[in-house]
Length: 195
Ligand code: GAR
Image (cartoon, rainbow, N blue to C red; front, side):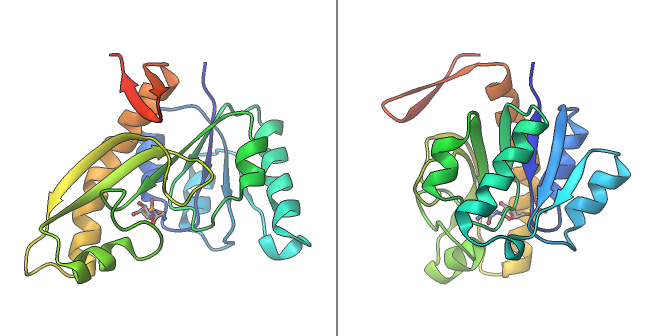
């Protein structure tokens, strides 16, 4: 059986889509006190915590606390949902569970911050979103699922954000389901799905 820890820094719309699909969420963690994601957690009476990075002497100490909380809540899968902080190799090596992330571009294009603006500036005709396992690189782990959206001349950052979010809300829960139902294996850093 599964129990998710969801890490979110902001709006929390991906968190909402995960909640709506009925996954068992053990804890929601944010690095931002004002994160809308924390309000959603409270509404749904899901345990939630603001863990302030500034309250720790180093990134490692901060990440130790994140791992402690995840373990205390007996979570066996971490889902990053707009968590705008890079987890260090320390965290990845010491996490006893798989870690998933959703990123608003067709990786390996446009990793990092401001993915939508990067795509618009480049002039791509299609963009989209990617759910992937988190490894020690930046948005570089094995890809589980992607969805494509067309980019038009009229698109702005805002319209592209919204188009892509719609797809994020569809594929993130689908990818999580594949992982919790153990329908996925990784071979030569490629994800193979056995439905
Ligand atoms: C989403 O678009 C997600 O793909 C992106 O942040 C947004 C969070 O929205 N993540 C990243 O850019 C990670 N580098 P949400 O808080 O409404 O789910």
